[in-house]
Length: 275
Image (cartoon, rainbow, N blue to C red; front, side, top):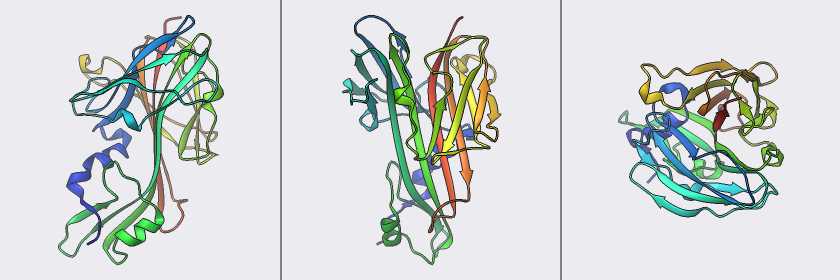
């Protein structure tokens, strides 16, 4: 039997690949982003939800996340708990500089209809698929077969002492953000500049939405939508301090066979401090 899931069971995978659908949103929210002293603890919430920083759908598995210290060493996630609508965990910061908390994944995905007109999706929610697995699992003569390369990245940064940039180096995989303004050095009334890259190349046309915390208390989401210029750059400026959620989407037709398109998403949670 071909390994696939009915499309209805994988709606989450589709909404996560479409950032501006106003559907489910994923985020890692730290209790704070900048601390001082010789060492400090920061606690995190991570969830997939209908809104920003209001967990109401299901808990994102914290075990999928990695933490890297300012010197590039892995850091343990501690006191992890999976609750009904969110996962929580702590990270102890013992080294001065900036830590990155993230998940990054790449996969080949396929959509098609069977002979009864039923829609299917492969490889399934929370799974990744390779080219070799694709040829084994997906009927090559399927109706309306659509194959894409996908990449998803979820990040936040926290700093003990002064911010450092070593954890913001590009890997050349998927959609990435180069922080021209450090995410832990963002202030009201000042430009906040970011640059996007897709597989190492400047990602012109990347579509970005930014939403401030407190969304549930506003009549409208109040998100800012911008598009990256030919250098892949965007510039933001905020009047209000708080925690902000940024999501970016990029798509083109430069995929390798058997895929025909590349689609990537990137999420960053960062804090804007009062000047």
